[in-house]
Length: 609
Ligand code: F6R
Image (cartoon, rainbow, N blue to C red; front, top):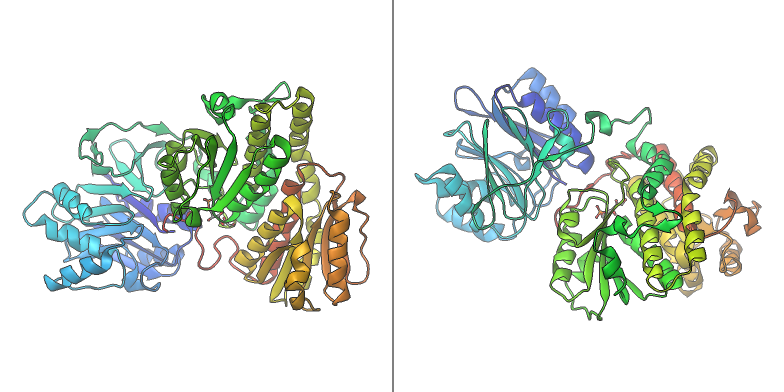
């Protein structure tokens, strides 16, 4: 998704803006640009279709110098990726603006603006904002113009705006899209997230919904949605500036796959005392809320949705609590019947996913018992606006394809299930057994990572394939779905996941020698059923790739490649069996030469609908 950086300082801000853009690359983008006000009070702008590296090359040849500036990485929504659509957008050489979000009423605003004589230079929804601000200036104060212009906007925005006539003033606003202010010594910065600014500050203010900030080098005034001056807390980030390096791995995704044992350990740490789940891991009020829970509604998108699906198997089996899981973009637009005592759980790596946030805001008005967020970003909108929070503590995830964020979400969800089961009379012995399973995870995850080479070899079979089928049963079905999602998003091979029992109801028609079938087959109560389903595949000439455990009694044979990745079966299986599928997707994508950390058309933080 689009990334914003801005700065007002006594030094030249171009290097800060460029470094900030590099650090936002992980969010996904297709074009980039920067604008500064130079010493002659003139706006200077450079934009490229392509990578920040190309922008940097252009700035090497034609540097832009200025003490105030804004910069942007664009992920196309309205208008194709090209230079004229790249931000910053400028109106009449006076106002420059960068924007993240979507302006829903852009068409009507554009029409009005054209009628009143504005020339339109791009196909973006953003250009109407910069024109609206210019139109509102009309002899008025810059800040007042931004107040008035934003009132005309419907939709979501985070913006940074500069004005040649007030070359020391940077105005920032947010509604529906995230924006942070970095506090320096005699300088201020803005950005879409803290990573962009870590080289220049550790101090951050997170703007809240509807806030507008009036920023000069030595003064910051924040107005809330009612235009009252407000104090917003300064947060000190503990992240170090080099958090985003690859530590010798070829890709962030590989680093993140291999960091899962530590990430999982970090998400368990402090959440278990004396073999018991510490309820305060979910917030102060958790014990009281959990004792009233009669059912659970989980809402999320993409990979996080798959985590929710797995949790629903655990919840009904371990805690005897009914659970329903729904995709956020569906939940937010339909009428749901909410039963008394239902806990609303949202799951999100970023905590800024527009659909998940909208679902949370809807849930808050819909009579749920309480809202709980499972999230990896402490200061995200989702964590700030939920009643209870479990922080997954996975550390920043940079690769667009989610890996450690997913497995640590599952840790949080398993802890939640055990916590809820405790309120339903779970015995101490059972609780301690579940806790032991959880504590065994880092070591067992490490063991599975050692199959890296075998999986890399397996991946070579996929290089000429166009389709793949993933099969699982029970709580391993969402694992198969996650494996298919990983393969398609980073290798661009079309992949589908099915409950293995569904094969004969349709998808079996697709199976032939060109359709590899990947199965996750732990030694659970459905194993024999799954084996029969796999026979159906073999009988049609389909080649099988099976991830099983030592006791699954499945060996490699003609047309069947089996990797026995685990020694025993327990509730941790969905977490453990995810890892080989991540590695498989990764190595297939490597062979295909794909852009693994920034797959085409995808963004890390999906802050627009
Ligand atoms: C896939 C992936 C996405 C995200 C989805 C939700 O690898 O990462 O499917 O899971 O966009 O994002 P979050 O979890 O940030 O709400």
